[in-house]
Image (cartoon, rainbow, N blue to C red; front, side, top):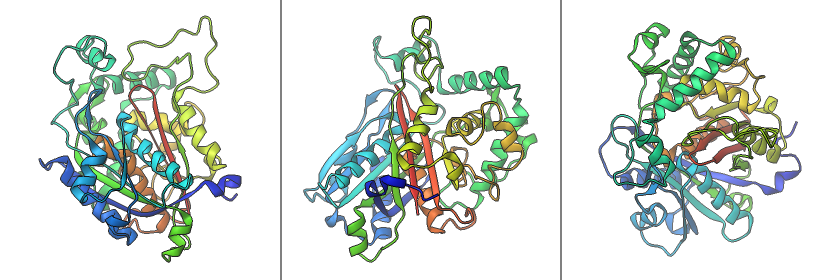
Length: 403
């Protein structure tokens, strides 16, 4: 079927994409964002002075704003009078920034928008900021319970073990797959094949997840230039990659599956569980807006904070039924050459987290794939790509791009 259906009028062009390679570089986050922004502008063939709106994914630490991202990038690129927005949605910040920019274009308020996200991260896992903030749930989960991010990943992994009988060996194959995918990605931090035995021999971090079963923290940046379809055509791009949908949904009460940073689920004693749990709802909203089903996807970039979590997303997107994700993986459906490759970029397994940038980086990868420019990791005949992740405090994040 034709992707987009009756909503084809609600699309904008992805005119340009760019990244700063991810790693541990030790520089200011602004310098990474400027590199990514200039790369995206050059890719689009658009001057910074032609950008009418800039949206920045905000760099934060554990619930509290640390920097002013949108205007910071505008200053670094050269004050031009462009209008500006800054979006905080934790790991979904980039998708929210894309959504705001897209909405301004669709509303006719601008023709050209630049979206930028970049970050620097400490070594090890993300830790709470200083101070005593007893009403901050994110601070409380660190300080009261000691529930670091890997602790949460492990709880999710335990859930899969209990529900579906999966094992560490099943999840190790996710790492093997993503490491192979990322080998030829010049922006990936880790470009090395690993074996399942190496994964299973790595140090235990948070039982049952080992070091090579969880993603690291990184420095990095990504940017996209969005334009109206009319602007793209006027500039000689008659058939650009297009944004067909953006989902930023929140959960529906009662939320019966625990999500960070919450310490308990909602009771369903008085109100029945919703038709769709939070992560299912994120994907459903994007697919519904695009007018397509999961069977129409050529590829997906998902939020593999851990190997086990990647399998959750298979089911949340609808690539398979609940409990069948491991089978999908083992059958080769989600590897390059399979039915619907997942994380052809290498995913967070090869990049690590650079929080405000990662949802934008996913869109960069989908754009390269839909253009046929993902050298060394290209999905054959790609024409529809989905990105998905989620941010703390109930921030949904999914973008669907089509060609």
